[in-house]
Length: 122
Image (cartoon, rainbow, N blue to C red):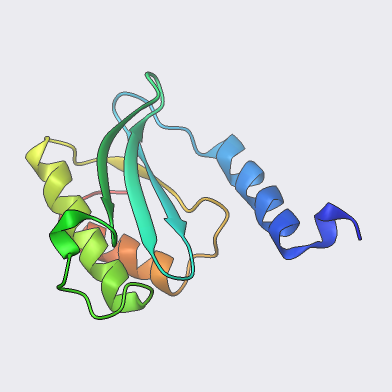
């Protein structure tokens, strides 16, 4: 079976297609989202230097013992809120959203909406 016909192959094709179009710069940093079955991760990346400025996930120490489940929409909303708070602490307000090949619904959409409500603009 061809790797392009597998589920992971389709995800990698979408990821590459999105990554070609979505680039951050020093004014608009890139908000990258990755989700697994159990967790969701989000980071703000400066593409000019290649460094991560802010990071938040359901594995962060801020969530130890507070979340009952880490792979659901409620957890994604909490991660978006935490990411927005950390960004505002570092004077980051404008970002470019990189969904990383994932469809914009469910947990990815919940994270994006809570980050917007927290003060990020994209």
